[in-house]
Amino acid sequence: ENGRGSSWSIQNLPQSAPLSAPAPQAQQSVLAQHSRDLRVIEAYRERMKAEGITSMLSLAITTQHTLYAALGTAEFFEFALKNPHNMQHTVTVEIDNPELSVILDSREWRHFKDAAGLLTPVEEDMFHLRGGGLAPQLYLRPKENAHIPFKYQTFSLGQSATTQASAEPRPKQGVDTESPWKSSTVPTKHAKVTFRASSGKPLAVLCLAVEPQPHVVDQIFRFYHPELTFLKKSIRLPPWHTLPGAPVGTPGEDPPIHVRCSDPNVICETQSVGPGEPRDVFLKVASGPSPEIKDFFVTIYADRWLVAPIQIWQIYLHSLQRVDVSCITGQLTRLSLVLRGTQTVRKVRAFTSHPQELKMDPKGIFMLPPHGVLDLHVGVRPHRAGSRFIHLNLVDVDFHQLVASWLICLSCRQPLISKAFEITLAVGEGKGANKRITYTNPYPSRRQYHLHSNRPDLLQFKEDSFEQVGGGETYTIGLRFGPSQSPGEEEVLIYINDHEDKNEETFCVKVIYQ
Image (cartoon, rainbow, N blue to C red; front, top):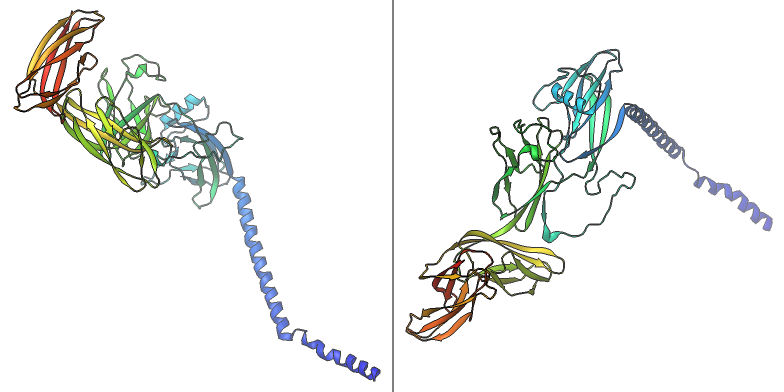
């Protein structure tokens, strides 16, 4: 039985083997799939072969060059272009960067060549200009060489407006340690020039890497202006021959002055005037929302080709919230400014450009809650009449950030002077002099009065206020005048205000030092 059992098992094994073998249809399907894969791979290899050959040919006609350029300074170079074919070509010069251009004027070309000391020939009317912003063209005979003049010049440094409230320290990254001339603040710029034949195929390619370099700032101007308005400013230029870097010449030979601005949204121009007349640079800038700061550069040239600037100005425009105040000298005028909280709680403090004339409540450091609204109470007591500006800034004392900024525009008038006095003091008296004047309460009831002066450096009161002056009573005001080391005349105003700091009367004292 064991033998028969083993024989049965061996005979039945071949019957189960065909179950795992593929059918003829399945084998054909697999072979067809393999054939398709091989055709795809062959097509891919053929395409990659063509791309590889094209890439190698492109590398063979491509020239890499690095240029180091500063703001406003023109960098000149020539590219040697050769027609390698035995037939003539009309070559189109295509540039993908507006800061790189072909020098089309032969006089400008000759000027740059003389400055660089190049001895290559200058060809008159080399380029054909088609107009309409189309790329220039030139004609090349078979196997002909030509030197194409280029000029790279930038007037822009990128972002021109910042907001101090959002300023945060930035980590240093992307620093090229291999290039000591590379500026770490401005990234590398790139420009590509393609010299394309009439058939559409390129004859040569120039890939330019531009490393921006630091530039010198000759003057810095800082303007404060109401937000969302236009600043119109005229800045007078000194005589051109006194400017550093100006070409040598006699003062009578005034060259044309040209200006360029780094911000295309700023109108910047100058006008030609007669010999010996002063020249002005006109600016028209739109201010943004407070507390935005616009930062841009103005470059000034004294040559017609704008080769190198003789002056570079950096201009800051601070946008402030405008508050108009009509007031009287010596009288306290109160107003309230709305403070709106930011995302988080802040410790802030208010600072003013005229602390003697503007007082704030709360004083010192206080908390500005997040998304809350607070009132900053301001009291203005101007010392002189006229129209002027007072700056008020709210600063985060922990992060030293500008939270809010106001431009308080004062329109101040002089009060009516009810009495005038004249006193004479000797020059050089170390102790000064004591004087007295009287004031009568015109009201039938008792009143309280406060004293102020427009010249606290020259006049001090014995008492800054006097109380409980009965109706019709007369009060004697003690005055102390400080000494003077030089003869002359000074007018000192004495403001007599009521208990609410409104001006009741104003006395004028003419002090003669002799």
